[in-house]
Amino acid sequence: MTDSYLTITAPCKGEYSEKRSKFLAFAFHVENTDEVKQWVGQYEREYYDARHVCYAYVLGHQRDQFRAVDNGEPSGTAGKPILGQLNKRELTNTLVIVVRYFGGIKLGTSGLQNAYKQATIMALDEANVEERTVDSKVTARFEYPLMNEVMRVVKEMNPRVLSQQFEMTCQIVLQIRQSEASLLQTRLEQIRGVAVETA
Image (cartoon, rainbow, N blue to C red; front, side):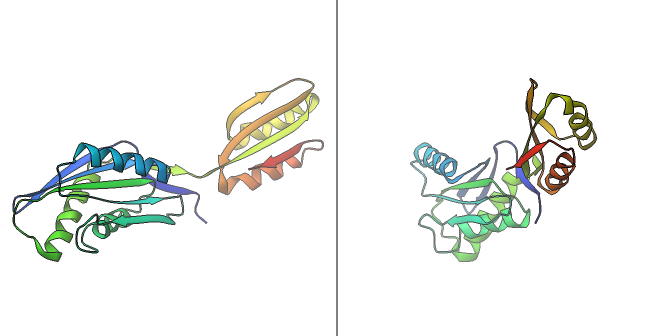
């Protein structure tokens, strides 16, 4: 199981022309299918005069949610080449929309596939790609006298501190890479009197 993934950080675009047909590609970072629907709906409204608004997306750190939509183009000629480029770059949580303005000359199946692919490449070449980690949340509860021992583990393992509450009974909520979460939990549980939960 991998605990990191690649995604784009900000919207970017590219443009490709073939036999007077124009292909405008737009790439976005998305977290869920609701965001996909919002972007697609917005671009369908904005480019209402375009012949086709095709798209593909990949979601989830394991890249297990994906869809390719041809939107009236011959089956497999639009969504599939867009998705192919997302897969080639191993991107996830990424949506690419390609808007096509028909130029009057038919491109044929391979011509369409190539045009959607090239437009997608041009947009993704502009993208800022970032590696992000899949994190777990670790919550520790303990009595105040154990504070120094708990904080020593936190300092050594360097998780992100999301919240802390230090009274007679203390609680600290930490965020750490999934692959390091069980070690952090084990080390905290080795301190007698510390209760740990991982989410």
